[in-house]
Image 1 (cartoon, rainbow, N blue to C red):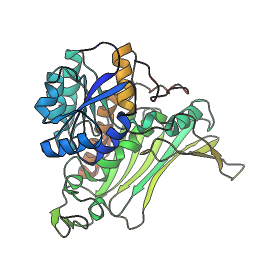
Image 2: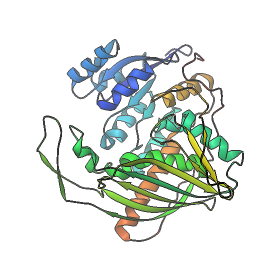
Image 3: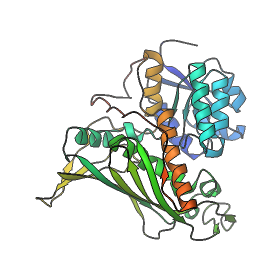
Image 4: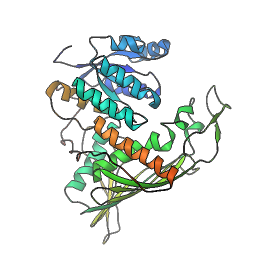
Length: 368
């Protein structure tokens, strides 16, 4: 494999999210997307043609390519562990969509496998690298809100069965609002407040089945296998506390609510599922929101792959690591256990404090 110049990338999984990744990764000069793979080769070929990628076919062909160094794993959550492990076995570094896997044993196995092989594994969401959340982090670090104390997050919608043409996987193990959307919010909270310590949660489902309202499968009924409304209280090792609501059962849409309160002020962070956005700050003695413009390059999905590629070439650190993905997975599984047992559950995994991205960091420039 080349040890200098753009890092060769292969994408496995040509679903909807691949379009966002490919549209962006094709513009990052430190990456060279060389292959798209899918269980359905025609779908891989369609996506590769659409985004100007020269090679396409199945997973095995992607893993056999000597010019592919990083596999971007965009398969459904239930397949994340299998595809990532096969990629590592083939000598490839891996960027995994969230969640890292759907259970802790397979997640820990991936970390062990990657360590033994000397390979890198990263995990979405890379929104934590975007200017919106990074500007928020720098404000917290320099003391703009005083000592961080509490946080509140809200994500609620009527559910993806109303707009997604193939929503079944979002209501199965590894899905639901907890596994689908909480990674954005929990990863941001870990970025701001440090590692999680425990959780108490309740969950429910509006109905045992849903009907697809969109696309060629419209009218088809499918089973709901996970909680579709989750309310949780998270305890952090720093002493901070956060309340969270994740729901597919709300006629009222509220997304992107992430507020952090400290001894001196409250911050309203940008939507953690996005890369940019303004920040609001309000103090107790002056009840007027001040708007702060985020500082950094306007960017999108795939910047975590860029940072990992630069670490691969230069030997430096990267932030959206598999260790962080495992910690957030641990928190989500603990949330599920808390719902099932109606008890406070400890979160045993540890993660080091995440360092802020330099203000002049730019994934659209050439570094490797």
